[in-house]
Amino acid sequence: MRFQSPLVPGRLIRRYNRFLADVTLDSGEQVTAHCPNPGSMMGLKEPGLRVWLEPNDDPRKKLRYGWRLAELPDGHWAGIDAGLPNRVVREALEAGQVAELAAYASVRPEVKYGEKSRVDFLLTGPGLPDAYVEVKNVHLRRHADWAEFPDSVTARGAKHMAELARMAELGHRAAVLYLVQRTDCARFRLAADLDPAYAAAARSARTAGVEMLCYGARIGPGGVTLSHPLPLDLAPQD
Image (cartoon, rainbow, N blue to C red; front, side, top):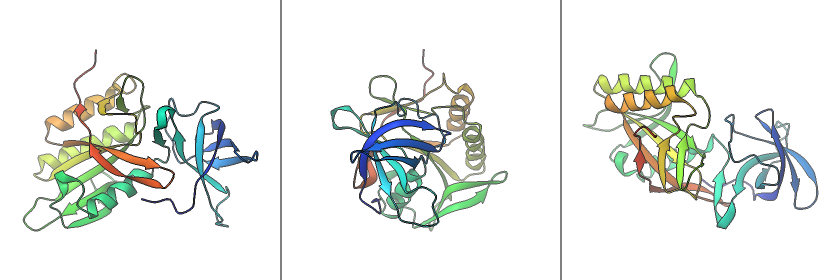
């Protein structure tokens, strides 16, 4: 997934109201950018953080910039846009790049299922059970090279786990794909201390047959694409 416009670098002044961020561009201009991320963004909202914005000239948009990336120490990157993983994963699914799901010929986004919900992707193929796939954006890192999810309480995420478990019990395939939008992480685990209910729902879903997948991402000012699988540890943490 390539960005539509070349990104512009700057320094974060503050992120506030969940969806807004003030940034000083390298040119010296101060701008307000859309922050496409409703989560806590723990560790990725400190003043002075090196950030990259995507400019736009769409008259329908109130803000001229959207926050896309954070530049991290040692040449690493983090993706900020929580909506981007679905686009990245869709491209990868359609190209057969997710090995566990590569046999499916059809990829349909936003299909109704469960209780007034929509699954991110429904995969179908001749002779194969339907596969219900949810995508989760991951960019929390607190310890060593661990990526963690979630970064705040997500009742919606726990609900998705229960609905996927129901699909698995009905004989379908069901999977959660965690896309790690950080290049400084090499493994994944649940942040059970931040949301015990989600962690419990995830472990229960796995017991019911829901598959847990995790992939890293290639991230840079040009765009974000799916990279390699990352190991998961879903055991309770001490």
